[in-house]
Amino acid sequence: MSLIIRNARLLDKDGTWDISTDGSLIAAVERNIPANGADQIDAGGRLVAPTYVNGHVHHDKSNLGDVMRPNRTNSFQECLEITWEHKRTYTVDDIVERASRAIEEGILHGATVFRVFADVDSIGGMTPLEGIIALREKWAGIVEIEAVDFPQEGIIRDAGTKDLMREGMKIGADIVGGLPWHEHLDEDARAHIDFCFELAMEYDRDIHMLADDTDNPNSRSLEYLAAKTLREGYQGRVSASHCGALAAYDEVHARKVIALVAEAGVSVSTNPHISLVAQGRHDTGNMRRGVTRAKDLWKAGVNVFSAQDDVNDPYYPFGRNDQQEVASFVCHTCHMTYPDEIRAVFDFVTWNAARALRLDGYGIAAGRKADMNVLCASTIQHVLRLQQPPAFVIKAGRILARNNIEREILGA
Ligand SMILES: [Zn+2]
Image (cartoon, rainbow, N blue to C red; front, side, top):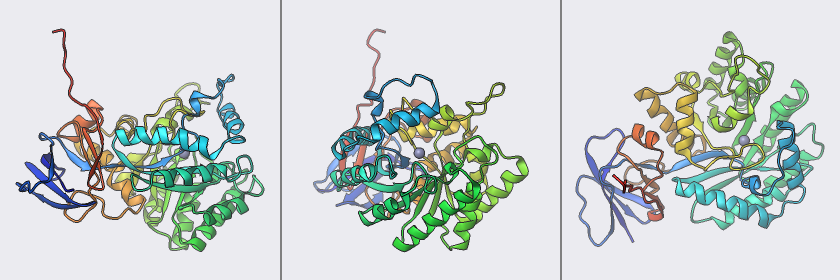
């Protein structure tokens, strides 16, 4: 069955347009498309954009917030310990159930692609990754889920993780993860990155690391990751998340690293929700907020994207899996509030995220994938101002979700 969206406003085009689908693809974007028996949606002049891409989220931990004990010391260390307590006894079914609730929230907020990090380490063994692969299978044909083979406890400091990560690629992980800054020594962080490249090149897979997720200006894994990307000819296939230390470097060093990241074609994901609550904790006077220099990276030509990271877990008690909310946080924390900056931030959760994940056929044009949100307003500014979910979420040419965005005051 084909579908026509009428009266759609599009980015970078004047007026309103009709969009028709043929199977899972967009067939045409024209002024007036004849009905020909197709189902029809009236967008009413609202913006239609491609569905959101959530390129960094930990659904193996999602919704642990409902079952975990309280954090008694209000410390990050205890967040880790609470996670370990659960990770020891995770089951595949438990992960799929908790993660599926987060995926459902993500869909209702207009995301249809999720890059999901799954812990692979000596505490939980392969179970988190097996759970996320089962999640991927469960949602196959509905939304796209990528499983990241992610060494949450380090590689050098957590003996046996290399073998587990190799096993992770054998059982079907899509992406090689990394957490180099978490190692004890700089040389270990470099060995960590070297191993991840070795594994990624063996399986011809992309790489996504959490780099320098700290206020510590001596944390220098992002620059090595970028240099290694250049040396191995892996430009365009590597992403780095958080990069909080970049906000702590002195200006001269920060500029050097930003230029290197741009040259290496490394995409950078900023995840402001978690950075805002996890970083700056040791500051007593002028509290830093730990969000990486997204605006400077964007201006330097780096492919910047933004993602949710956490949903109701031991590290972060909130999170609706909502990329509009993520974009709003970026606008606020990175001082990106002028029209070209708001547009750039919208790209962080759409086109740039799609580029980082190397998705095919992304965008609103004939021949592209019919993965579209009919948003709540006619401009990005108002979509982000109102923070209402999309009226319709369309995946592969069919309506996947609907939100009632009509509101009225009854007492006036
Ligand atoms: Zn993360």
